[in-house]
Each structure stands twice: as structure tokens, then as C-alpha cells.
Length: 308
Image 1 (cartoon, rainbow, N blue to C red):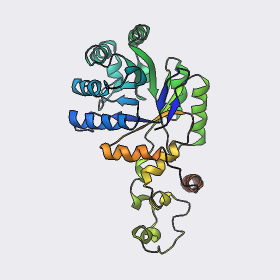
Image 2 (cartoon, rainbow, N blue to C red):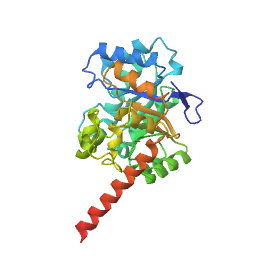
Image 3 (cartoon, rainbow, N blue to C red):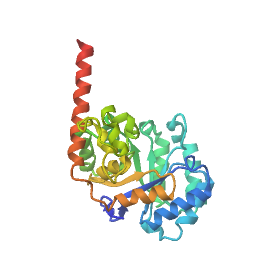
Image 4 (spheres, rainbow, N blue to C red):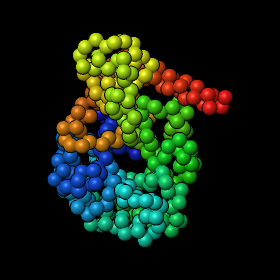
């Protein structure tokens, strides 16, 4: 594992952080413990809990207790996963009840980061902010963050009360968005990445032209250049999966303090961690730029056709 500086805090965060979803792990304490142990064995010290369920918190506290709490960075969603309107849970009463269970009962001692959802970070009541500030003054909460993308990034940055911006960073991230991330950094915020693997590129049939399909099964494709200018290379690069290539590319972004990953099981997490030390094929950055340019050109052509 490699580590990156976390702003001016003096703390180092693992290049990969682990999302821990109580729902996606089947609400199984055993599954959570196995995944957390694998993360620790691989040098991961940065974790995000999407739920404040007592069993998840207790499992996390018990498993992570083998490591000095001061070298761990544990963040928590300010709302329970799966809710319809996150801002409903940002009112003082539900927020106070949620954080009481995390800080007082779980054994985690304190929360490093409380993350507010993109759909609601601008609707946090002043009473809740007063409570949050009191927690920070008491040392029970260190930082606050907002999840935001595109136009909401500037809203989150200009709010002035968030220390961390959590945002999607993937192979489709535009230069305009990169400039917004630079803006956040210039204002003293740290940037955490997540969702590095776009859903639309996960299946070969979604990106590999039919003329290039034969090559996927070891034979010579009907047209070796069929996938040129597309994301077909994600499924055609030897010894790399599409997910690994997308992760490797996202890790080249130096402004990210950490990049959160989702893992189905310990074996999946092991494969993702291995990417940190691998050198991305030299052709991939150029292929990504070509594919992005082609996609933008296609989109522009479609818009002009509609306007005609």
C-alpha cells in the first residue's frame, strides 16, 4: 500500500480507502470482519461506514481495535444508507441520536469525518451546525465533508463549512471538473475520490464493437481496429480487467487524498490493492483520451442533428 498526505493535518491516508456497506455485505458481522481484516493486512487505514447500525459499528470497533486508533481514519455518512431524503436526517434530533450511538456506544472513540450527501448538504439546519461545532470542539468529530459532483462542487466549496470534498473520479472526469477540484484545493479543502469504475463500461458488449468480439475469445478479430476510439480496450488489454484499468487511471490523480473502493469479498479487495503497485500500460492514457474525445464528438453531433 502507498500513502498520501491528508492536507495539512500531518496524517497519511492509504491510497485506497474502503467503503463498508452494511446492506451490501448482507448485514453479516462475519463478512464485515473478514473484509476489514483483509483491509488491515493490506495496509488500508482509511474507512467509510455507510450505516450507523449498532452491529456494524461494534464489528468495526472490535476488528479495528488491533491498530492504534490514531493511525486510522474513519468516516461516516451523516444519513442511513437507502433513505429517500438525506436532509430529513440532518435535523438536530435524528443527527444527535445517530452520532450519540457512534461516539458513545460503538467503541470507535471519535469520528474523523462526517460526510453529508449531495442531496442535502445545503439544507443542514443551523441548530445541527451548532451541535456539529460542539462535537468538533470536544474532539469527538474532526472534519465535515460534502459529497458533490459537477455544479454542486462549487456550492460545497463556497459554503465554507466543509473540510473535505468527496466526489466521483473516473476515466470520464472532464477537465472542467478537474479545474473545480483545483478550486477546492485552493480553498484549503482535501478531495476524496469514489466510484472510479463507471457502470456503463463494466460489460464488454457495451463497449466492444461487434466486429471486434472474436478477439475477446482468443481468435483474430474480424476488424482489429474496430474498437479504436472507444472504450473497448478496457476489455482487451492483456492481464488487466476493466475495473483494474479504471482504478489504475484514477490513482494517477495526485490531488486525491484517498480513493474509496467497494469490494464484494476479501479476494476482490486483494485484487484491487494489487493495482496500487502495478504500472499502468503506457498506451492506456492515450486510449482514454481518444475514447473521451470520440464520445464528446458523438454527443455534439447528436445535439446538432436534433437542432437541425
